Image 1 (cartoon, rainbow, N blue to C red):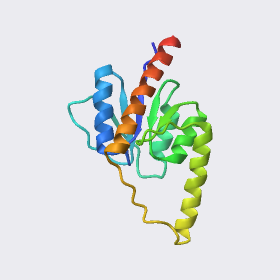
Image 2: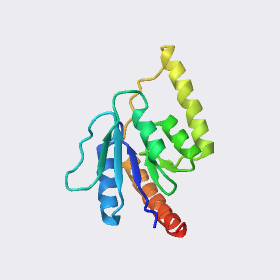
Image 3: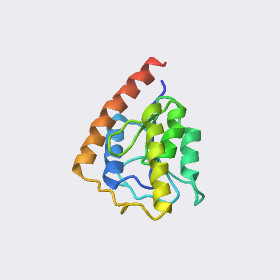
Amino acid sequence: MKQVHIWIDADSCPRMVRSYILRYASRLTLPVTFAANHQIPAPESFTYEMIVCGKTQDAADDYIVSHAEPCDMIVTRDIPLAARCVEKNLCVLNDRGTVFSKENVRQRLSERNFDLQLAQAGLGGSGTITYGKKEFSAFANCFDKEIHRLIKKAELSE
């Protein structure tokens, strides 16, 4: 049977999200891989794979895109990575509980590119984004729903 694999773009993933995923995956015995351009700390009591991809831009993204398969889940804040994974028909969600689709990822890419242009022109905002209990709760609810959907999908694809 194909097993759901959880891929985490770990460079900017909040610690509480990483810990939650590891606890959840441990209960269901699902493999978890962190991909980043440096070592990411995680609790030693859980089994996971840490892939350090080097310092080149998008190295971790490239690794995830090339290794993720149907029925896998990708957790990322990175909109260009989300777009690449959505194009491969993979399940992609961010740490705020948004599941990316072909429609909403295009809109997010446009917003991101516009924000980058504003920032380059010196017109960008402060850039600080808070992450608290409300955002984490939305993520946990979405993660639970999507992981069970993927497990059923994997069972049916046998």
